[in-house]
Amino acid sequence: MDELSRAQIRDLMAQVLANQGKVLPDDDATDLREIGFRSLDFSELALRVEDETGEELNFDAPGLRRIATVGDVLDLLVTLQRQ
Image (cartoon, rainbow, N blue to C red):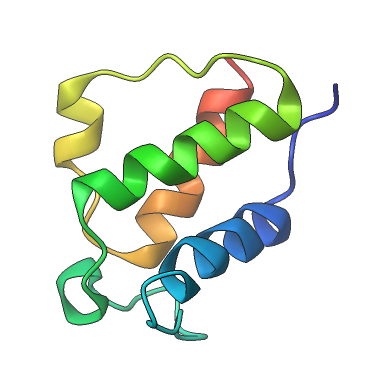
């Protein structure tokens, strides 16, 4: 299947947060701690991307430690789809 766009991944991220009663801010520079986006949430988002694309994402711990903002999450998932 085709890769998801940044906007599509953002929509999935908003759904993950909405399930917890949280709202994804419009600003990609928002710190993940401010919105309560945890590693478990990232895992759920990554699984949703995999389900949508039918492809497994291969990411490493150092890559995950570098994400701090909403934009970092989106950038990482867009990049991982291309590997």
